[in-house]
Image (cartoon, rainbow, N blue to C red; front, side, top):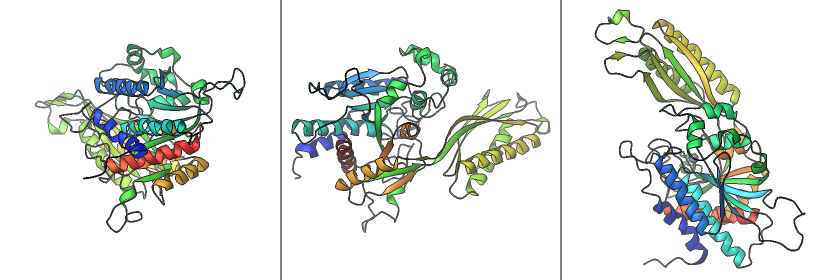
Length: 439
Ligand SMILES: [Zn+2]
């Protein structure tokens, strides 16, 4: 029989009970895993869960004009005149958090692990403050960002992009989901004022440092560089950089027609062009060391079994550490797509939907995170990632860092994404130590 956990170890383990509490929310019977797109019933339930957990902990919860939820642990009122009169007591706060939305058929950890770990880490910090072992110098908040995955409206990290002004609010408001609902209408229906959306100086001034804990989304911690004799990698890593990445929509247009009456020789079928383009994109990506090029979504219009499509849209995700290389890859993809389209009597057109430059996280914050995490995980490695995050968007505005928790499957954006309970608890311990040191 194992000893019951006590004290801080018990609080670290809280991350697993928090994750268990939401394990039934947003399960996707068809795809497997979870589908929790922004403003879906599942995502709204997760928000309610977060608000309830934060409120129960005495945090002051509010939602800002861009739909970001903030749970504040304000400094206790000081009567020593510490803060200048009129100064914002939340300015320069330490902020941690992540997102609750998911890709279609995603895993349970991408996003929610960072939110649950933040709540569990807060429990520990509060215990330390009560015990007199933590003397905070600034406010603290947990932030939950909407539409991180871009699953509903097509642009990833939409909440943090609005907050920082990385996306023009007019463009954001005109984005549509698959039913044709604009982001403006969806936001209004959920109590937000579309006219108030966009760069938020007050909210930005309140983020002194941002730390996001996230499930590792590749095999980074399972490679021979890091694994022990038993083949087990360290539970936690500190992020060094995020690979530059972007999304483009490639549209092939041809002649919609009848599948039975149109001779094979008389067709201008954009599906044929699109399918050749998928293969070409794979070859272009594979030929460039360090690059990734993916077609994960394809939509024929009108999409009938006995109908030759009039248009096929496919979405391309391209990533490379060198932004110039990413741009060159996309140019090459468009050139090839146009050649392929011409041979089929079709046309090809490319639209950029989002583009994020390679992000190098704040050097001094990363050093501090590494030193703190090393108390729990000696020799905490630094890991570059190919996945985008709100932390990457915020990095252009404020010192930002990330902690990754080991994912033994090495798989993410899939039901097989996985984190062991012990690693989640270790991740929370490392996060709590890092936040405590930074406070
Ligand atoms: Zn994520």
